[in-house]
Each structure stands twice: as C-alpha cells, then as structure tokens.
Image (cartoon, rainbow, N blue to C red; front, side, top):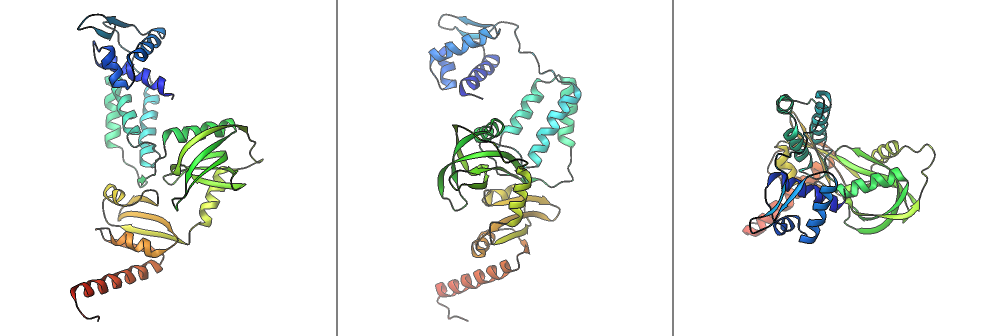
Length: 324
C-alpha cells in the first residue's frame, strides 16, 4: 500500500474517532503539512465520504453528523475463516511485523456485529492446537510484498542483502518464487551476481528495487522442491538440536532469532540451529539460565565441557589458586 493511500485511510480513522480536528492537528498526526491534508480531504470527498469543514477558532474537520462507515460485511463462514487464518499464521510463525496479526484481528472484531463478534472471541480464547508454536523471523512487509509482485510479474529486482556472516552485498535476482518454511520466509531465484540459482532468507533482505527487465523461469521449476532439497543438504557443518527447559517467549528474547528456530513442546522449547563452529554455540547455551538437553550433535557436549574447563581455570587464576 502506497504511503499517500495509507495516510488517507489514517485520516479517515482520525475523523471517525475525533470531531473537529483542525488542519494543523491533522497535519501533525499524519506527519505532513496542512496543504496535503486538504488534498487528502478532497480525496475522501471524491469517494463519497462527507467531510465537513467548520471555520473559526473552534472549527475543524469532521464527518457529517450521523455518518458512520458501514460495518465489515462477512458471513459467519467468512468471518470464521479470517479469524482462524490470523490465529494459524501466528501459531506457525508466519507473521510479518510483530503487531500486524493482533492489530488485524482487533480491527476485524471491532467492526463485526455483536452477534458475530462474541462467538468469534470465544473461538479465539478457547482454541487449542496440537502442533507446537513456532517463533518465526519476520521479514519487512514491503520487502515481502515487492518480491511476491516481482515473482508474479516475472520482473528482475535489485536487493540489498546481508549474509549470515554479516556481509552486505547489492545484487540483482530473478525471483522464481516466495516460500514460507519452518518459521522463515525464503526467495528462490537466479542470482545475477553469482550467475547461479540461489536461495535467500527474506528477513536478510533490506530493500527491493524494481528493474526494467523481465525473466522466464526454467520449464517445470519447482521453488518448494528446490528449497527443501537445499535445506536438506545443509550449508553449515553442524546441525544442532537442543531442548531448553524454559518459557518460549523469554527464550526467544535471549537468542538471536535470525540464527535459530524455536518450537514449543511438552518438555520445553526445541531449538534448531546450524553452525560452522560449536564453540560459539557452547557460549550461547552457557549464557542461558535454563537447563537444557542436547540431542545432537554429540560433539556439542565436548565443546561445553571444554568451555567449562577454561572458565574454571580462569576462575582459579583470578583467585590465585594453583592449577589442579
């Protein structure tokens, strides 16, 4: 959604919630100028929304008396589908910006008729899942939508990308598809910089810029099959799985969400990660205040023991004690 359109809709929200806001007050809330506010008011009037202007010291803009935006008209089945979709997306870690799903759900519930709002609120409050919750890594909404549009239109885009090594590059890609997998979003396509087929984590893409070029994907290419095959091969030396016996949200705040995937389970939170070196993973686990169980690799246990030995030796030296 373009920024001017977003501001026009925000202006409409302000007028519905407040009566008699001056042009200067509206400009301040919209972070724009009074002249632009007048243009937005004109847009609303062109859409048939009766915005009145009152002059004078206590004047301002208001919606015509008695005017209300019509409620969102959904059948019971449609409303249930929307609510369940939002709840499932949150459970799967499929959200984008953190407050988006909660905000969308609140808006849907606010505009529904009371007879439908109460049963849906009951569904939201009582629904349980057998599948474990996933803490996902949310990409930027604008980046995600731009990649989806380019993939559908078959147009090349330029991206600003940050690798897992924190290396920044600018490159052009032909996005063959956008995929959601295990709490993360990916783009699969041809990378012009490397002249090869590549997979990119979308949360590591800062910007997307359209290019005036079109592309044709290979015949029969399946982005999902390519992604799952690439992940199965493992780009890192170590595949780590550890159960941490603590609360999911607290653990998520302590661990780098760009490097791990967290899934709630009956015995704790399952952490999955990839690593080139295990000493860094040992430091990460040792910094947590919760007990944990290592599932694999076994070599991680030795890395933790080596870290414990080094810390013990350092403590002895600090205390002036002879080595054992």
